[in-house]
Amino acid sequence: MKTEIGTDLLYAAALLRRGELVGMPTETVYGLAGNALDSDTVLKIYATKGRPHFNPLIVHLQDISEMSKYAEVPAFAQTLAERFWPGPLTLVLPKKKIIPDIVTGGGDTVALRVPAHSLAHELLSLIDFPLAAPSANPAGYISPVTAEHVCEQLGGKIAYILDGGTCSVGIESTVIALKQDELVVLRAGGVTLEDLKSVAGSVKLPTQATGQLASPGLLKSHYAPKTKLILGDLANLIEEHQSRKLAVLALSHLPQNAAIVASEILSPAGDLTQAAHNLFAAMRRLDAVDAELILAERMPEHSFGVAINDRLERAAAL
Ligand code: TXA
Ligand code: MG
Image (cartoon, rainbow, N blue to C red; front, side, top):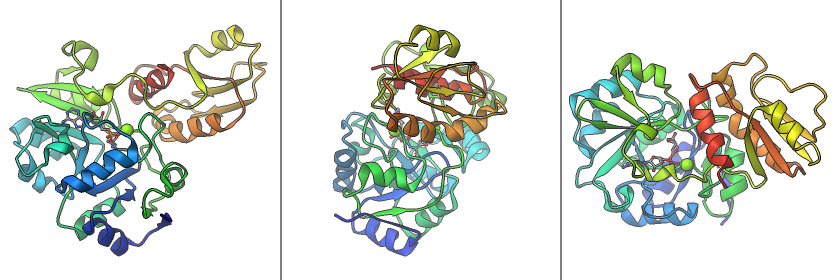
């Protein structure tokens, strides 16, 4: 199959109506989108991504008013959606029957979000079904933040990638579950814990949640470049591994005199929002150079640093 990249919304909508998959830009990362109400299409999403069926998909809606068509919506969920949608927050809620079991990995909850990207919004307005869309990367690899990234990995497997430029947030949505009025973060992401706390008061992190895997997507090895990645304090790591060919991923600056083959600075000003925006493209570039190891700097544990560290930890967990 030949993969085209473009901005033809009508064509993308026509493909989706036919049960085909389309690469879709969102503000977080690109999604591999298909009709969420059609089991055969959803099976195609899992197959194209190489993703196990037990790891459920996020269902993307055009508008907050659609939420109650697909899930039971407690008042607290409504409040959160009103505050953060359209935007990088995914709510895990009790699912309604209309959502096929294959979307939710057989589970009785469904993950919903309204993306904040004009092309995603327009695309959703042209069709009369919601879109199931995991990040448009092969399972286990770095998420795509440009149409070209999608094409590098899924070219030949899908007919069309809608080109919405570089994703503004650059890191996936924050996934949360609601237990009574308690909010449990299943995946850190584009809405920070500080933002959630301003609305929710108490926010539980996955490590504080119950022992079992709260979200199947929290599989340890994930977001992994092909080159081995190690996370920690840069100066120490470089000293320890100085005999190897090193690539380095740093927040704002490199340690002096570091002998390295390639480096990426995520934000010269040390701004964590900008660092998140640049993270995945930088990881891809470092993965493409001839290095034996990628050494990544651990970010400060606040704001977007939490989500970046989460992705880097999983990239390192091979
Ligand atoms: O920003 C994003 O969320 C992007 C864009 C395309 O929207 N999508 C994305 O999808 O990252 P994916 O499939 O790569 O990650 C979805 C995460 C996974 O960790 C999955 O396990 C979790 O959401 N998830 C989905 N449905 C769930 C459910 N019912 N219960 C718990 N976790 C769920
Ligand atoms: Mg993903």
